[in-house]
Image (cartoon, rainbow, N blue to C red):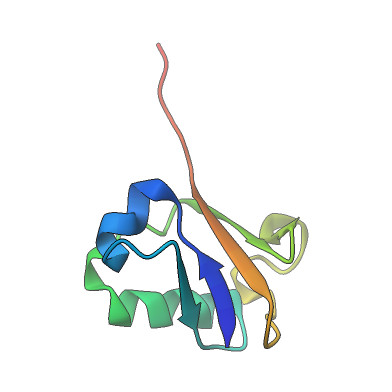
Amino acid sequence: MSVVRIPPTLREDTHGEREVIAEGDTVRDLLDDLRTRFPTLDGKLEYANVYVAGEDIRTRDGIETPVSAGDTVILLPAMAGGS
């Protein structure tokens, strides 16, 4: 199990929780677990930046990045905008 830190913009979807425990061996597994338990997250995690133990998964194995028990995973929604 890993601790997943939930950003303020997604806390309504996790019933106000700042951190939740998720199960899985990879980032994909963790995100699937979150979507199953918190269905309103579906569609909101596709563009999130994900960090495992402080490292951006884009510099590792992407969504297949392994996670170990006790790892902290941070979700940061991608920001867009401007003109």
